[in-house]
Image (cartoon, rainbow, N blue to C red):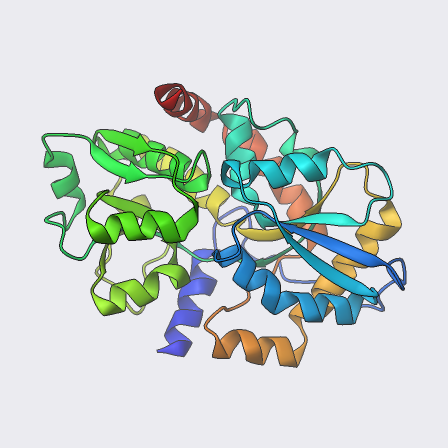
Length: 339
């Protein structure tokens, strides 16, 4: 099963923009951070998936970057926008970076969100550590078991949301592409909160990363309706994938959404980040991703790695921003709906 799940995570990132882009061979890491304290601002709550990954990675980043200390700071809010805005405004020389889901930043910009006070393409992209498919699940006791069930509801599909994050925007695109009504209920505090709402029946369903969904699916607390990716799961081949079931007229839109989502968990720095700092951080991430101890730990914990070099990621983000304009009116309408 573990080998199959690894295949799933690998397959989930093989979209046209990012496929065939391996890490560069790790070189000697510049000593820019030697003796310094590095602050990693996590775009999520202490109980969230970003934090679990950040805690796992921190000792290896510290080891390979040579910092005196790597300090993790949780900065939830706005689906990642609070942390992104903080890093965007840092003064030159600040030893702080962002860790979280990069897709939120691009989607918020495309949506014209007032909370996004940055240009997502101008951040310094320091390396992706993982990407995995996102899955729409409903409660285990829900009568909804398929996309046709969602389409036949005589009311909107109730979606508990922690704000205008990537899952909020994804649901807006799915509703538009697949033709069902959507009611987003905001104000929830993170994925654990929205998950509980779905299990209790206070909401119809929500979207999470595959690894975060797996436990509840196995226990029967949740039921998977579809995946937002380009590849079927080898473990669960009967779960529909949106790029297969969307109408022909909407396939390019859902493919663009899937591609953006696969940017996933990454480190990014401020737009004025010094070139020496960028080079040192990218080299440290690349070295950490090849560290046998981290690979063993991530495999054991089913938090598998799928890295992308920061230099490659920088170019990929610019390309995605250019090719995803068709999403903008859908996302803007979704934001207007909840204001």
